[in-house]
Amino acid sequence: MSQPKTITEDSEQESPERREPDVEGYEELDRQERRELQKRSRRLLGDLLAPHSKGAVLALVLALLDTAAEMARPLLIAAVIDSGIPAAGGGDYGPLAWYVIGYAASSVASAGLTYAFMTLSGRIGQDVLLDLRHRLFRHVQKLSISFHESYRSSKIISRLTSDVEALSELLEESIEGLLRAFLSVVTIAVLLIWLDLPLTSVILLTFIPLLLVTSAYRKRSYQHFRRTRTTIARVTGHFVETMNGIRAVQAYRQEGTNSRSMRERNAANQDATVRAGFALAHSTAAINFIGNATIALVLLVGGWRIVQGELAVGVLAAYVLYLRKFYDPVDDLARFANSYASASAALEKISGVLAEQPKVAHPPEREPLRISDASVEFRHVEFRYPSGEETVLPDLDVRIPAGQTVAMVGATGSGKSTIAKLLARFYDPVSGVVAINGVDLRDIPETDLRAAIAMVTQESFLFSGSVADNIALGRPSASRADVEAAAKAIGAHEFISKLPDGYDSEVNKRGCRLSAGQRQLVALARVLLADPAIVILDEATSSMDIATERTVQRALRTVLSGRTALIIAHRLSTVLTADRVLVIERGRIVEDGRPSDLIGNGDQFAALHEAWLISTKG
Ligand SMILES: Nc1ncnc2c1ncn2[C@@H]1O[C@H](COP(=O)(O)OP(=O)(O)OP(=O)(O)O)[C@@H](O)[C@H]1O
Image (cartoon, rainbow, N blue to C red):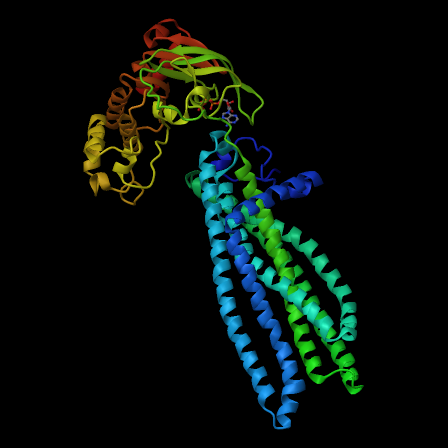
């Protein structure tokens, strides 16, 4: 039996899944593709860090000084044991005092340098993240509708939240750890050789198991951490989609199915995280064990050499102290590998989104072109969606004179919304031309095109903010008087005045939820204020009471008067007031004429009209 599909808003609307730009199926990529992906991520990281190169150099210098101060201390301890104490025994307290002062000075320097390094590197990390968040948001907003139709919003949320978070861990903690660990390991290795070469050769033997453990761990952790990223993105994705489609979820009683599916995703994430934790536990335990066993070996060999008179006690003490310091950074390096695995998987995804280019290229801005009295033309337009195989519009050829209101009707999937999307230039045709006043849309700068066309969608989208803000969106420079005048002209003033805070009422606040009809009125007032030459209207299908329906119809007439309008019509009253009706069937215009003429000729529209009449009477 097939698994029931979980209902979410996105899964209802989702278009066929295309190959991801961020490639979640990393394992399926060949080497060349992986290399390309890594190169792209590194380029992005380099790009993000470039403006901070001076700060990074300063941070490096601070870390170097801090390491030097820290490394001096075991040497000072050796000096205290081997020369300070014996000298003090002989009555000369000078050397002991100087060594102790040196130790205290190095501790003070370490405190200051650690503070300076951490604040500076933290600042750089935060600046980089801020820049990345801005870039991502700006970029995603500009991408074509075709991108948004195939890349679910929940995925974008994952990019902006958990992926940026993974990078933040790398920048804030791990790079700092890596730098210190690297400097410590190198300095200690040199110091160990300098202190006592024979003892160091004993230690070199223990490097073999150490290298084996860390390299095995790195390989395993890379896979586990990559999986934690993918699985957490699925958890976020499912959560966002469920919340977006919560009405459908509840209406179809999908809570149980969705919860099960959420549990599975959470379990997959838990599994990946636990496995990553196991791998870390293995390697930490192994590194600690190797470290302690090495110290035991050093004590044995060192003790024997002290007895032989070949080594001083203080040197052995310093040696053991360095050795302890040596294994901590090795462990830090292994931890860095974790963050790096997470962050590079995240970077690959983020850089994938940033590498996406808007599919519709706009010509450069010139002198503002005020488009009024716009005629619209589709000249032999052929269109197929980038993600689809079927030709949706085979050869659309129609001209709409300026000021005409055209209603499109037709079965679901016949291509009405697609025609509207082409006029708004969400997509470009495969062949043929869409033109306004004879000018190809591809030659009209974006600002002019957006100023010329207003689109009212079925759901009449309202943004967070006051009712006045939502109307003023049509013309941000509009005064409160302009906003009220537009609302009055539309017939929305009455209901807005009755809201708790009038025009200042927050649209998304509890107790101020607007009905579908009221939302449409606000959206229409916004269009009136924007004063575009062309209106594209996807008429709402939701039912309204007769009074509201009348007000909306009146508002529509006000908005459409003197403008060119293309309406995806769902209401008989709208169709009947249109100047012209286009009946669309499989992307072709099969009837075209005045509503009254089409009713008379007994074809499809006449039948549709008849059905409408019956349904309204019933
Ligand atoms: N983003 C998309 N990607 C791929 N194919 C799409 C996409 N949007 C629509 N289609 C396909 O294009 C065809 C026309 O769809 P369109 O939405 O234009 O029809 P419509 O007449 O507006 O339908 P409705 O009245 O149901 O809104 C359908 O076969 C649909 O499956």
